[in-house]
Length: 439
View (tube, helix red, strand yellow):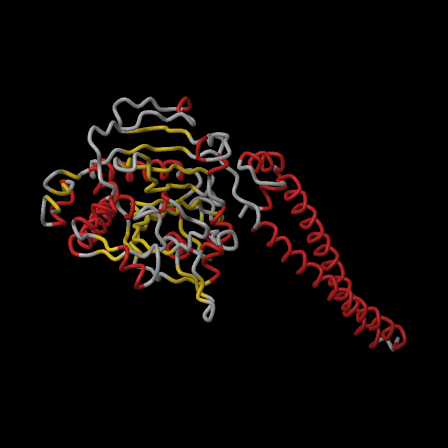
């Protein structure tokens, strides 16, 4: 969540940032926060004055009694009682204002960095890089991407390939659970395991410590990383225990550092985790969700960093390079997009999406988002670090990214590597798969 200091000291910049993110009623929301904060501070000031006056009078009562001034002492006691009653009212007023302030701040998204392009939707995102030879990248590609790979022969979509080679059973998943919960079989299951091991091994080589976190979290964890209350309707909720199935390993891993003060010398912290992820995806339907395109349960490897404000941009760059390296090793056609303000998540300050090309569907599929949240999550989490030189504590920067999400990677591997003999396994996965062809 945005800090009060940022809101009060750089009000116009905050409002401009929220408007760039197309947050409705930005100025009204910020003005309301400032007004409630003013009321909170006023209540605190009056409360402090009341408590000080009551303490002073209480000290005088004893002296008056010793001096035999019983009547004056009784009058002082009445005043102390009145001050205490007023203090209770001021305390309630302050607590009410604090609760309202928290409620308002939770409804305000993060503000984007200056380099985030203006725009309202995905069509306004900038393509900043691609491994396609004929691609021209940059701002000129906004809403006008026409450098898709040329598919010379008709390709089968991954759901037909999965059925042909008995890799994934979508109907069985519907029988057991429902739509969006596929069953992987044989070499399909092995491909999942191969990708998981490959991604984790690559993360370990890059210096990430592997974490195996719970896949259910409490509400405080959801609040800490910004899924709650913003994405409450998209999360599976275990109502009896008031626990949530995680939509991404970002939630439990980042919450390791909730209410923690780290030493500057230990930053950046680098963690990775493989988990199952669960998303209700309410309202999703149509051809774009067919097969593996959009699932309710899927596997994903997440990378998370906790860093200093000075180094977080470099950390973000390194994370982007890591994800790009994975796609290069998998020999997949990809592109990288810098998301516009209107297409960014609620919590991110800047975000890049990685997309792979589906030859059969002839469209791009998102496989990773790599974000820098600045201090937004850290402020919710109370995640801080202590400066080595001064000993002062400051909010950390948090970052995360998919490295990688499996479903659409599997779809792209199946569709882009199909041959008359079967599915060619990318060379980097052969040691994990134990075969060069899925047939």
